[in-house]
Image: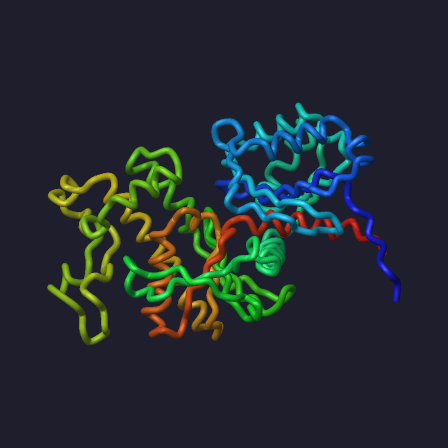
Length: 373
């Protein structure tokens, strides 16, 4: 058996997940730089580190999620902080241009990227910034990144949580839990669209199904019907709206509960069902429309996830993806749906770093690629 020698990759250490709506970037900032390393470090590497760590916003749309930063992490024998940065995919060319302006290609580092954009923008990276991407499978990266981040904990706090008492959506309590023995799990990744995976071990999983109705659908329809511009704006509108003004409920049809099948009168019978009435259309607000779209998309995802869990005989359902970022409405709806329809057998689990696991998986691949037999 050969021993493996670890040759650390050149700094900077990045992992990228280029999705259909958002680009997620993780950056490892070394905190154990020696005086000798400091002296030898080239100026544009210092410039990149200063730029990324001294700002919390980049241009008009880039954001560093400071609250997610993992501190004093040891990776590949180095100690540092892991930063989490996101920006819209439509700003990708500006990011590539910045890499060119900062002469990124001179640093001789490998840029590991996953997501569909790793293929879509590969030629732009090459022609605009003289950078070659190491393209990685997004589902491999998702799973490996998730398991890694959960294993290091969230600065001493658990990564995973569920909502206690999900039937009371107003007063359900966020409760930490352990993913120490995670398998098997149904992993529901909600980005622009949705992929649902049955995961049996770190390297043994299958994509069960998916749906094109995801976060991109919610935002796209919100932009179309309400005139909003951003995900944050759409969620803000949804938080103020009342979806029952838009959706036809069971009680609108039965006058109350449908007791034979334990369907509560407040359950949605027909999403947007009231919109066939001109009187109803004239009375609703844009906030109501945003809320109804959020409920429609979330209920659809929850319904598909529950059926997949039953078919695969898996009781642990983990929801991840940037659709859940700052989205307490959907988190509560998913928790309630899993609990109610399974009669308490299925528990919806959530993770603090939601949409960044693919990018972390790409970074892990960079560090793994430094191992030479």
